[in-house]
Length: 373
Ligand SMILES: Nc1nc2c(ncn2[C@@H]2O[C@H](COP(=O)(O)OP(=O)(O)O)[C@@H](O)[C@H]2O)c(=O)[nH]1
Ligand SMILES: [Mg+2]
Image (cartoon, rainbow, N blue to C red; front, top):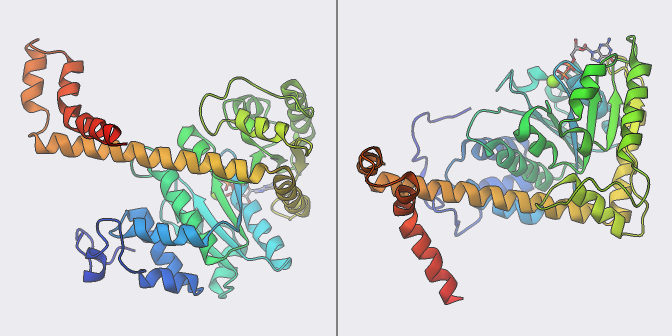
């Protein structure tokens, strides 16, 4: 909850860190690392609001993170993700593991624990400090969610949770990017959905490590399992194979396979499981499969590869945002585009030239930097 709406100034501590370089550690960081959930909640709010000092906070936390296993749970709305996550949390707690949950729900922003199942709400309400649930909204600028989620994961990781679950509807590139921040991707598929399986082909299928046909109590689950098997066979997941095309950027599924193909360890063949999340049937299999995948990631060296491509994506996102902000600042300093636009509309200059004129000072700085090196 924002305590000072409309005010950017905050208290004097924050002002000192407004350039993103803290001279000393923010007390919030100390409290978070000390295991105070309230500090964790406040840090995530700062991350979400891009509040003063959040960068140096994330910087400090980054050094303390890196131990948690991040599990992405994705699938269409109503597939039973929240119900399954709820049961999964309980299963982890039974094993003595602590769990942080991030629910990204475009339909119910800021509804807090309300988007999740009863078990988690109860766990949270009864003060089980081995569970922490947070929802994040999809509002904000392009790519902002991916970065904010990555930062929130860093905060939960530094806090010390053994497992971090990110629930998200796997629609759209932004959400696919979010799911890619996970070590293990669990994809929920509703039964009887020949069409749904068809839809999955668009991007999300390739990044699933575990397929879960939930609502197995309903008709059509067997057929859906069958269809998924066929699809995986078409894909050719046999060891050593499975290249889909040239991976010309970081973070493509091809990168993951290339990484594992170079190692000694065998490739991971995605599992297909059936569950009834409402009753808890099959949840233990899901938990065990995630653990098995985790062991595979360590044995194959793929964990580090995934971490590298995820960090590459984060750095690139930050850079893109940085460039965008610089350009906007440049525009603002030059009275916006107004004078340039008149010349473009009057056909004195073309849009490329206009863009060049705006970008020139930035480009010059970059050129200077490169000649220094
Ligand atoms: N019959 C049946 N219903 C389920 C199952 N899992 C979840 N549901 C129901 O499906 C609805 C949507 O579940 P929810 O977990 O909110 O889905 P989400 O949108 O993917 O998070 C709820 O009414 C659940 O009770 C299941 O295994 N079987
Ligand atoms: Mg949900």
